[in-house]
Length: 228
Ligand code: PGA
Image (tube, rainbow, N blue to C red; front, side, top):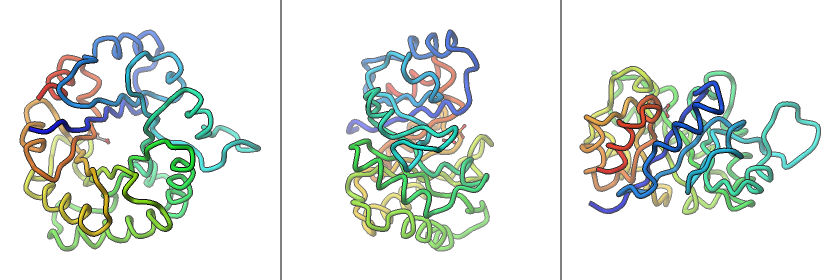
């Protein structure tokens, strides 16, 4: 199996720097796949791991923007990736044009955006209906963006943190669509990935890797996933 990209989204966990450092120290640095850890932004400067990513960032470099994280600050910390458009942020008001600004700014600073799509999908939808939802998000998000430089993570929102997953065949179909239609090179699957189901997703040719939430907080389980 070719090397795939596996991104850990720690979300708002853990709640102490001690626990964050401990978790990072337990993750294999010589895994079979390429691994990126995305801890909360406040920990980024103190976590020691070969590839780090942020979970979000603002579209302005500096100025009067209370509470934001600047892409220049990420760049200064040598952060290589940044998740953008996660459904947990879309759910509290992030829209496609904000996402588009963020992607453009990150690319200017040579940070690889990981664009999440899949908010608004439902488990009952046929593949074509899912594609319609994704098309709207991709077309708005990718406006004037060099899509060949970004990673897309397909995360059906109903699968996030629920223990339910899409089928690997569905993830493969969506991977084919996103790559062919938008010129994206790497499409990840995310949503309740764990050590038991990761392999069948990674075996799909057009699933370029995984975005892992809950299971990335359990070092033993995450090490199994990244070593498949
Ligand atoms: P989950 O989260 O693996 O806990 O479902 C994935 C994500 O939200 O990126």
